[in-house]
Length: 91
Image (cartoon, rainbow, N blue to C red):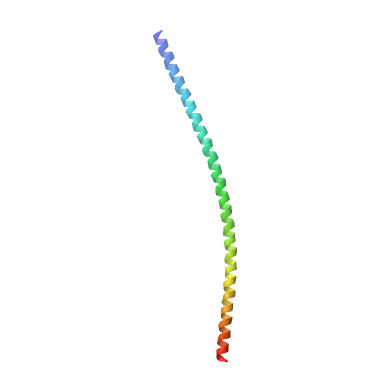
């Protein structure tokens, strides 16, 4: 009987180890699912920031054109003022 009891005990120990492994696998699967959800949320956030960055880039380009026009107008005004001053000095 002792031999059969030992075998049963070993089988029970192996079953217990398998049960523990199944619990560990379930925990790992749960962690992977959570990480995937976090990854998806981060990816969505990154896309949102990329869209915002694209919008900011568009606004900067518009502002750049505006500043160039203002600079050209200011240079034209300065040139006109200098021309008027020089014309007055020579006349």
